[in-house]
Length: 387
Image (cartoon, rainbow, N blue to C red; front, side, top):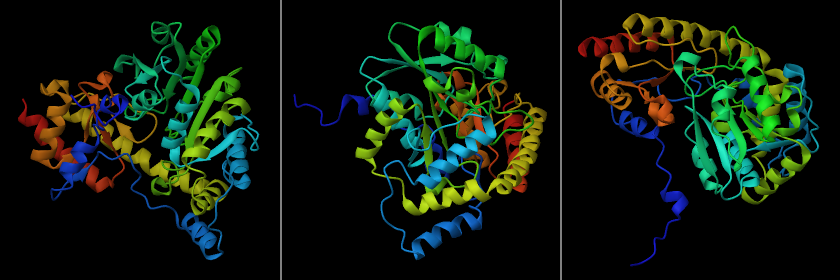
């Protein structure tokens, strides 16, 4: 029997559970998409203009592997301004090709075969595969709607073994929209200290919070040295296609992550870095305007789903709602399939984000108010048909 030409790591990873419904929706007409986790806003013009100017000026060459010092300094300054945590732009900030690259580089730099990484679930679809691709073993730590999908230190501690290397959290959360309280984060920090664990904190949605404060994990007492902080520009500044992110860590860890980045990528696109710099320096009002609009949509879709009869806890971050579809008698997948095929509304089954999401569906409110209201009417038609 001939050997497989594919690696076991690759064959063990399932395709993204998000893409299937997008691919079907692309072949249909009159579909309202509540599926994609991407701002419907266009990148603000002054941000795009900064990139265009860099091209016209001929600044189209490689930057430092770490990114331009101007952008790294701006990232460090913004984190200090917002959260009081100070990073040295020379050796503690790395500019990456989106947070996805930052995540994979971090895993490859820090995880050895056999290392266990505690992954809080439901979570973004790339989290567990990133551990597997690094040769590690993802260990799922479930969260529950009764806790507002916040993870507790008590739950995390159940899964810690001598092989545990890292706790991986992502708040504000995709897919649930949950935001962690400072009290619970401090309890996780104490746990990391107790067991000498690293914490990888994906904070790509940090600016998208509604009526609550986002707590930067690295800003907690004693946590900066053991935190690998991921962030970026895609969500807050409507810059998904620009592919710019960053990772911050202590010099030893960042040096290892930069080594992976250096061989895999070289450097993030130069013109995209110019755009990101403009976003940090002059894009604050853009962020506030988008957050205000998201909040109006959030309140509309939240009230609508609860009225329809799909219990939905209040998300306080990101741009997702996570309604419970179990009252319909349908599974997450069945509900999403019927919603798309019969009502032409695209959403994502909750278990695409892990078993903890079973019984729920992720809906994004990155769409116009008009489309959200129409989608709610169509969802109500489906719910009534199941009774």
